[in-house]
Image (cartoon, rainbow, N blue to C red; front, side, top):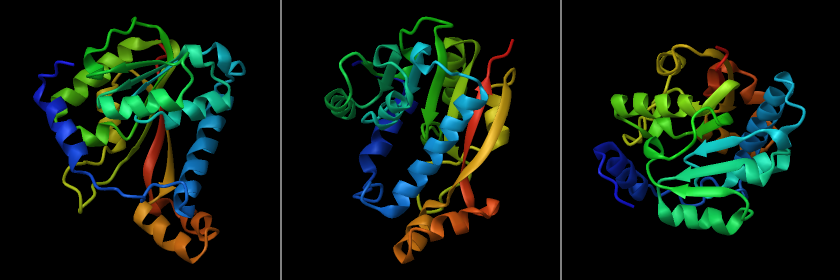
Length: 232
Protein backbone atom coordinates (compact mmCIF):
# COMPACT_ATOMS: atom_id res chain seq x y z
CA UNK A 1 0.00 0.00 0.00
CA UNK A 2 1.80 3.07 -1.33
CA UNK A 3 0.49 6.16 0.51
CA UNK A 4 1.99 9.52 -0.28
CA UNK A 5 -0.63 12.11 0.64
CA UNK A 6 0.66 14.07 3.68
CA UNK A 7 -2.75 14.20 5.36
CA UNK A 8 -3.26 10.45 5.02
CA UNK A 9 0.16 9.82 6.55
CA UNK A 10 -0.68 12.26 9.33
CA UNK A 11 -3.94 10.43 10.06
CA UNK A 12 -2.03 7.16 10.43
CA UNK A 13 0.31 8.85 12.91
CA UNK A 14 -2.61 10.32 14.88
CA UNK A 15 -4.30 6.96 15.21
CA UNK A 16 -1.01 5.42 16.34
CA UNK A 17 -0.84 7.94 19.19
CA UNK A 18 -4.27 7.10 20.53
CA UNK A 19 -4.46 5.22 23.79
CA UNK A 20 -8.15 4.51 24.26
CA UNK A 21 -7.81 1.38 26.39
CA UNK A 22 -11.25 0.02 27.22
CA UNK A 23 -12.93 3.44 27.09
CA UNK A 24 -15.20 2.26 24.27
CA UNK A 25 -15.59 -1.32 25.45
CA UNK A 26 -19.06 -2.83 25.17
CA UNK A 27 -18.69 -3.77 28.83
CA UNK A 28 -19.25 -0.12 29.71
CA UNK A 29 -22.90 0.88 30.22
CA UNK A 30 -22.33 4.34 28.75
CA UNK A 31 -20.99 2.87 25.52
CA UNK A 32 -23.98 0.55 25.23
CA UNK A 33 -26.34 3.49 25.72
CA UNK A 34 -24.61 5.54 23.01
CA UNK A 35 -24.55 2.67 20.51
CA UNK A 36 -28.19 1.77 21.10
CA UNK A 37 -29.26 5.38 20.67
CA UNK A 38 -27.37 5.65 17.39
CA UNK A 39 -28.71 2.32 16.13
CA UNK A 40 -32.29 3.36 16.85
CA UNK A 41 -31.72 6.64 14.98
CA UNK A 42 -30.39 4.72 11.95
CA UNK A 43 -33.34 2.32 11.92
CA UNK A 44 -35.75 5.24 12.13
CA UNK A 45 -33.96 6.99 9.26
CA UNK A 46 -34.26 3.96 6.98
CA UNK A 47 -37.92 3.65 7.93
CA UNK A 48 -38.52 7.33 7.14
CA UNK A 49 -36.89 6.77 3.74
CA UNK A 50 -39.28 3.82 3.23
CA UNK A 51 -36.38 1.53 2.52
CA UNK A 52 -38.33 -1.61 3.30
CA UNK A 53 -36.01 -4.02 1.47
CA UNK A 54 -32.59 -3.24 2.90
CA UNK A 55 -31.18 -6.46 1.45
CA UNK A 56 -31.46 -4.84 -1.99
CA UNK A 57 -29.51 -1.71 -0.97
CA UNK A 58 -25.80 -1.19 -1.55
CA UNK A 59 -23.76 0.44 1.21
CA UNK A 60 -20.13 1.45 1.61
CA UNK A 61 -18.41 2.59 4.78
CA UNK A 62 -15.40 4.89 4.69
CA UNK A 63 -13.13 4.07 7.62
CA UNK A 64 -14.84 0.83 8.56
CA UNK A 65 -12.37 0.08 11.36
CA UNK A 66 -12.81 -3.43 12.72
CA UNK A 67 -16.24 -3.80 11.11
CA UNK A 68 -18.63 -2.92 13.91
CA UNK A 69 -20.90 -0.66 11.83
CA UNK A 70 -20.99 -3.12 8.94
CA UNK A 71 -22.09 -5.81 11.38
CA UNK A 72 -24.87 -3.47 12.54
CA UNK A 73 -26.00 -3.02 8.93
CA UNK A 74 -26.15 -6.77 8.45
CA UNK A 75 -28.22 -7.02 11.61
CA UNK A 76 -30.62 -4.43 10.20
CA UNK A 77 -31.11 -6.47 7.02
CA UNK A 78 -28.40 -5.41 4.57
CA UNK A 79 -26.99 -8.30 2.54
CA UNK A 80 -23.25 -8.90 3.15
CA UNK A 81 -22.55 -9.18 -0.58
CA UNK A 82 -23.86 -5.61 -1.04
CA UNK A 83 -21.51 -4.11 1.54
CA UNK A 84 -18.07 -2.56 1.07
CA UNK A 85 -15.68 -1.45 3.79
CA UNK A 86 -12.72 0.85 3.20
CA UNK A 87 -10.05 1.12 5.89
CA UNK A 88 -6.72 2.92 5.93
CA UNK A 89 -4.98 0.78 8.56
CA UNK A 90 -4.14 -2.78 7.41
CA UNK A 91 -3.98 -4.23 10.93
CA UNK A 92 -7.45 -2.90 11.70
CA UNK A 93 -8.80 -4.19 8.39
CA UNK A 94 -7.41 -7.63 9.25
CA UNK A 95 -9.54 -7.58 12.40
CA UNK A 96 -12.58 -6.70 10.28
CA UNK A 97 -11.82 -9.63 7.97
CA UNK A 98 -11.96 -11.99 10.94
CA UNK A 99 -15.27 -10.58 12.20
CA UNK A 100 -17.26 -10.08 9.01
CA UNK A 101 -18.74 -12.59 6.55
CA UNK A 102 -16.47 -13.35 3.61
CA UNK A 103 -19.07 -11.90 1.22
CA UNK A 104 -18.39 -8.37 2.53
CA UNK A 105 -15.85 -6.66 0.26
CA UNK A 106 -13.05 -5.07 2.26
CA UNK A 107 -10.44 -2.76 0.76
CA UNK A 108 -7.30 -1.23 2.29
CA UNK A 109 -5.88 2.20 1.56
CA UNK A 110 -6.76 5.84 1.05
CA UNK A 111 -10.53 6.08 0.50
CA UNK A 112 -10.13 9.14 -1.71
CA UNK A 113 -8.22 6.93 -4.17
CA UNK A 114 -10.46 3.85 -3.93
CA UNK A 115 -11.61 2.22 -7.15
CA UNK A 116 -15.37 2.34 -6.60
CA UNK A 117 -17.85 2.52 -9.47
CA UNK A 118 -19.52 5.94 -9.67
CA UNK A 119 -23.22 6.12 -8.75
CA UNK A 120 -23.10 2.58 -7.38
CA UNK A 121 -24.08 3.08 -3.72
CA UNK A 122 -27.40 3.75 -2.03
CA UNK A 123 -25.63 4.88 1.12
CA UNK A 124 -22.04 5.87 1.87
CA UNK A 125 -21.32 5.99 5.59
CA UNK A 126 -18.71 7.95 7.50
CA UNK A 127 -18.69 7.61 11.27
CA UNK A 128 -16.15 9.85 13.08
CA UNK A 129 -13.75 9.92 10.14
CA UNK A 130 -13.93 13.60 9.16
CA UNK A 131 -13.23 14.75 12.71
CA UNK A 132 -9.85 13.03 12.34
CA UNK A 133 -9.07 14.90 9.10
CA UNK A 134 -7.47 18.25 9.91
CA UNK A 135 -6.68 19.31 6.34
CA UNK A 136 -9.61 21.21 4.79
CA UNK A 137 -8.60 20.43 1.23
CA UNK A 138 -8.42 16.72 1.93
CA UNK A 139 -11.85 16.87 3.56
CA UNK A 140 -13.26 18.43 0.40
CA UNK A 141 -11.58 15.88 -1.84
CA UNK A 142 -12.87 12.95 0.17
CA UNK A 143 -16.38 14.43 0.34
CA UNK A 144 -16.43 14.90 -3.44
CA UNK A 145 -15.23 11.32 -3.91
CA UNK A 146 -17.91 9.93 -1.61
CA UNK A 147 -20.59 12.03 -3.31
CA UNK A 148 -19.57 10.60 -6.66
CA UNK A 149 -20.27 7.07 -5.43
CA UNK A 150 -23.84 7.90 -4.35
CA UNK A 151 -26.63 7.16 -6.80
CA UNK A 152 -29.64 9.44 -7.23
CA UNK A 153 -32.05 8.96 -4.33
CA UNK A 154 -29.28 7.72 -2.07
CA UNK A 155 -27.09 9.65 0.30
CA UNK A 156 -24.21 9.94 2.72
CA UNK A 157 -24.98 8.80 6.26
CA UNK A 158 -22.84 10.96 8.52
CA UNK A 159 -22.18 10.50 12.24
CA UNK A 160 -19.59 12.73 13.85
CA UNK A 161 -19.08 15.17 16.69
CA UNK A 162 -19.54 18.88 16.20
CA UNK A 163 -17.44 20.40 19.00
CA UNK A 164 -13.71 20.41 19.58
CA UNK A 165 -12.13 18.22 22.21
CA UNK A 166 -9.85 20.50 24.27
CA UNK A 167 -7.85 17.47 25.44
CA UNK A 168 -7.15 16.02 21.99
CA UNK A 169 -5.48 18.13 19.32
CA UNK A 170 -5.59 15.20 16.88
CA UNK A 171 -9.31 15.65 16.24
CA UNK A 172 -11.54 18.57 15.33
CA UNK A 173 -15.30 18.91 15.60
CA UNK A 174 -17.24 19.23 12.35
CA UNK A 175 -20.16 21.66 12.80
CA UNK A 176 -23.30 21.39 10.70
CA UNK A 177 -22.30 24.42 8.65
CA UNK A 178 -19.15 22.61 7.59
CA UNK A 179 -21.17 19.58 6.50
CA UNK A 180 -23.27 21.84 4.29
CA UNK A 181 -20.16 23.36 2.72
CA UNK A 182 -18.77 19.90 1.97
CA UNK A 183 -21.99 18.82 0.23
CA UNK A 184 -23.39 22.07 -1.21
CA UNK A 185 -25.90 20.46 -3.59
CA UNK A 186 -27.35 18.01 -1.09
CA UNK A 187 -30.57 18.05 0.85
CA UNK A 188 -29.45 17.56 4.45
CA UNK A 189 -31.44 16.51 7.49
CA UNK A 190 -29.75 16.50 10.87
CA UNK A 191 -30.56 14.74 14.12
CA UNK A 192 -28.52 15.75 17.16
CA UNK A 193 -27.73 12.68 19.28
CA UNK A 194 -25.22 11.23 21.77
CA UNK A 195 -24.70 12.57 25.24
CA UNK A 196 -21.18 14.03 25.54
CA UNK A 197 -19.06 10.88 26.07
CA UNK A 198 -17.18 12.10 29.19
CA UNK A 199 -20.49 13.01 30.77
CA UNK A 200 -22.08 9.75 29.62
CA UNK A 201 -19.30 7.76 31.27
CA UNK A 202 -19.69 9.71 34.50
CA UNK A 203 -23.47 9.47 34.81
CA UNK A 204 -23.57 5.80 33.81
CA UNK A 205 -21.13 4.96 36.57
CA UNK A 206 -23.83 6.17 38.94
CA UNK A 207 -26.67 4.45 37.08
CA UNK A 208 -27.21 3.63 33.37
CA UNK A 209 -30.75 5.04 33.43
CA UNK A 210 -29.30 8.51 34.02
CA UNK A 211 -28.14 8.53 30.38
CA UNK A 212 -31.59 9.25 28.83
CA UNK A 213 -32.31 11.77 31.59
CA UNK A 214 -29.24 13.88 30.80
CA UNK A 215 -29.51 13.20 27.07
CA UNK A 216 -32.95 14.81 27.04
CA UNK A 217 -31.13 18.15 27.14
CA UNK A 218 -30.09 18.95 23.52
CA UNK A 219 -27.20 21.17 24.64
CA UNK A 220 -25.50 18.12 26.16
CA UNK A 221 -25.46 16.19 22.87
CA UNK A 222 -22.17 16.42 20.98
CA UNK A 223 -22.79 14.42 17.79
CA UNK A 224 -25.07 14.59 14.78
CA UNK A 225 -26.50 11.87 12.60
CA UNK A 226 -27.03 13.53 9.23
CA UNK A 227 -28.65 12.20 6.08
CA UNK A 228 -27.06 13.94 3.10
CA UNK A 229 -29.36 13.12 0.22
CA UNK A 230 -28.61 13.25 -3.49
CA UNK A 231 -31.99 14.30 -4.83
CA UNK A 232 -30.94 15.78 -8.17
